[in-house]
Image (cartoon, rainbow, N blue to C red; front, top):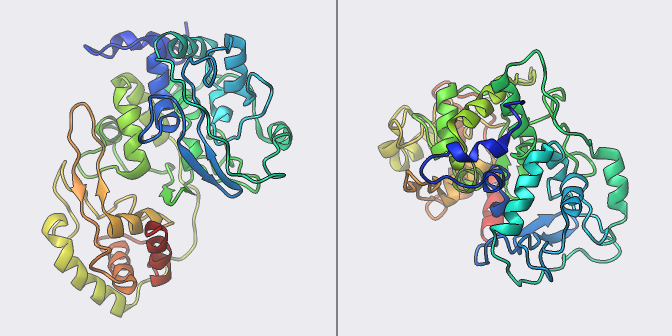
Length: 394
């Protein structure tokens, strides 16, 4: 038996709150995050996703036979999950990460199907049509998209790597579909890499108003990375935004063994070479930013950005602070942040300061953060702040 691939055997080792094999796969795949709308019924769809062509909406995946997948055979379900083709033959939009789910084992796919069909309550909730106008809404071109970008085939372990690395690779590339957020997209909105052999895989991407940072070349210990995935916080860092939701709905439920596998795999990925010179912030910007930091930030994050262990993130060496794209940092400064709610931890919050800082002041503050305590990232401009503020005000 290949221990790296059998998600279905791990449900019994989750602890007192043991779940079925299929529910464990559903947690690993984070199904609820996309298929449950904020005020909707569990897995009944309705979550909105913005695309360049218009909004699309997640579908009902409960076993309701009229609006859900209750009439799907396992073969129908497997085809939808691996090829993005629904029971009636229409193509699914690749916002559904079937390009990743294609790597799942038959055992895990069967367990997931059984869970959805026998343990999930049917919900008679009609699917919402996309807002994409005709003729752009025609789906036959998605068949061409599949022929160009869909890589079929179950994950194949690499013999030169250990079980833990292969286990992590299977979860990251397959059910976990980490690349759906963290891998940059190409001209046809395809992920520019599906595994570590392609250098842009997990190299960071902007998505739905956030920037998912590069997961290559992470400067974090294995224990801290496991802690982040388990609880949303570690000694020096914390998660919020979409990744915080991943912790709440998915990764907190994974076994320590699986989390260690994911950490082992991610920490093996080398950062892409980057010889570009970083522009230094101006002296005036640093002075203004330092004054703002002393007034609003230093009480919690301390004078040198060291934070407080396990409570307030360290800003020195912080992944969000130093990201190539400052979009998430700008959102946090303007709108605040909440750490995820988990079974073991309540949420901690940071207030936003968009009410107190104009675009120039906020830009100077972030340029100061990105140029202090050993941080070396490009300054933030007032124009970048204004763009994010405009989006938040919608």
